[in-house]
Image (cartoon, rainbow, N blue to C red; front, side, top):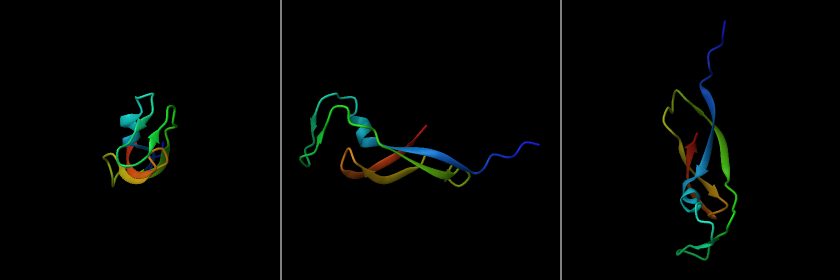
Length: 78
């Protein structure tokens, strides 16, 4: 007999602010500070688990993004 799928699944979280500005391949000056987004900055992903029965929709958490140098909204990606 086959086992049931577990309730816990592994998900990946990615910064949504970096996603908005990642298409530009040039330096971007941010108005609220002296932060400069450099060409070719790495995407930082967080990996975590969630219970698919308790949270069937996509997960959103506030985590630290080293590219933005801020705590930003991180959303679940597929």
